[in-house]
Image 1 (cartoon, rainbow, N blue to C red):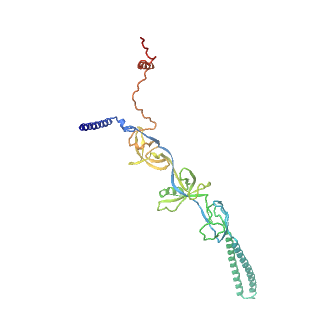
Image 2 (cartoon, helix red, strand yellow):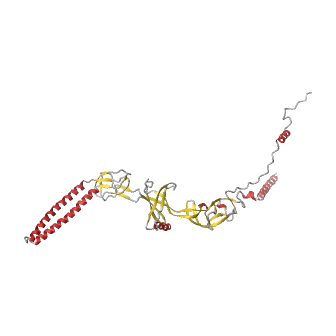
Image 3 (cartoon, rainbow, N blue to C red):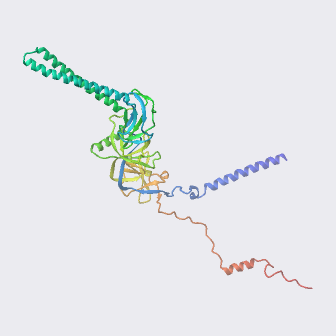
Length: 419
């Protein structure tokens, strides 16, 4: 009995191996169209095409920039005294010459009066010395006094004249210090947060400013470009061209402002190989805020009559930079191209293509040189299916149903015979 079970197991194993071999043989002998799949060998590859066209393409430099005020002033006192008044609100927009704060003016008013008094005293002394000098000249002419006395009087007059010059300088300095008690806005701009409160003692050596005043209109954006991109920018500036600059927000979707390139730095940063540029914006609506990070677009030039294709058509590989050129016989050819500037989704082809050429922009991963393609307008031929039998006529269908109907399924049960 045990031997029979062993033989039965061996037979089942041989049957399984034989079935697997038959299945593999049948699949290997299946038609190639069933094995190849949808886009198998010999089948044209569906692709998307684009046509090279003539047009203008802007030469745009893209960079990251920082909004930088043209003027930033730390407002401090130029004299020593008590801050008795702050005449501004934090965040206020002020005009040049507006009063910002007031230092106690009383000590400086007293100093001015002292200087004026000293000046008036010396003026009186000078007038008296000049009168004596005229008298001595007459007496010397009459030989009534010694010549030395006249010379001494002349020196005294000159001393008083010099004293008046010193007195005038002292009066001017006192007036200037009195003017410094009124702290006014040196520029037009917006005030930040207050740094010193009224009642505090201020002096010229203070490190904390009373407030910080920043010019917002106009305002600038400082950004960097590679040193290799600097020569064309300099050439355009030397030619007197106005280079437009656009700034966008962090998402690069919203344009914040449009201005012009003002100047560039006089040195190249050797650590990064970049150079700084400054663009100026009117900023009338104050969309640009100091120290704000922005995306910069500098329009250097515009290439006219350029051959333009989508960026998606450009491929890079063993031949170099190339495109798949669609030919009239629905095949593709690898065409090596030389590229120019890029603008978003468009790029200039300097050589290798001419306007009107069609290039592949979609489906390039399944292509090779000389491969067959199916253009977007072409529709694939429908595959033939199994034949479909025609439906029988209506009368014949009813006859067939009647013939198939079992006995007794029609007008009722069959009549029974009576004895």
